[in-house]
Amino acid sequence: FHQGISRLTGLELGTVSILVGVPILAAWWPLGERPGVGTVLNIAFIGTATNVALSVVPPATALPAQLAMMLGGVVTIAIGSGLYLASDLGPGPRDGLMTGLHVRFGLSSTGSARKFSVIHRLKLSLKSVFSSGSVMMNLESE
Image (cartoon, rainbow, N blue to C red; front, side, top):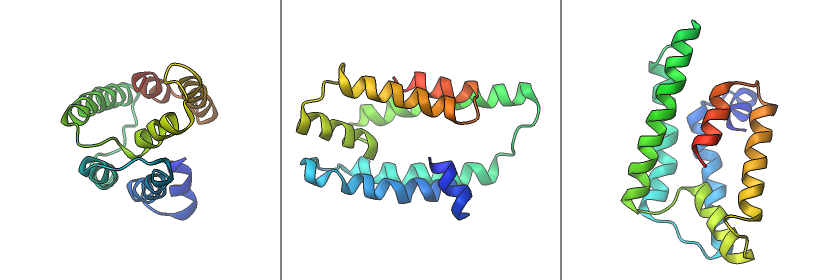
């Protein structure tokens, strides 16, 4: 989604992430969710870090380098997610939207919302240019 918007508009990928995060955060208010400082920092820092990384890290062209970058990215995101969640400074914008929908409409995290999320992620992985990195990131986030 973000990459498509980036390609269509010419905006940097991280900038699109920030701009999409704002209306997602705004969708919290009718659901009664309130952001923490970590929520706002998440929007700003993830987008900024994406822009910086894409401007500094050269694209990998050889398959071994691509695999190394993919595995390194999955591990880095797993560690970062663990640190972020352990800080308990508020959920990310997308997580808060899902928890707000759960509280408001009674969707079970092991029921409809989770099934929708898994099916949606699988569809996105298969719809995009199929890559093992997309699938790994979707599985890792479960």
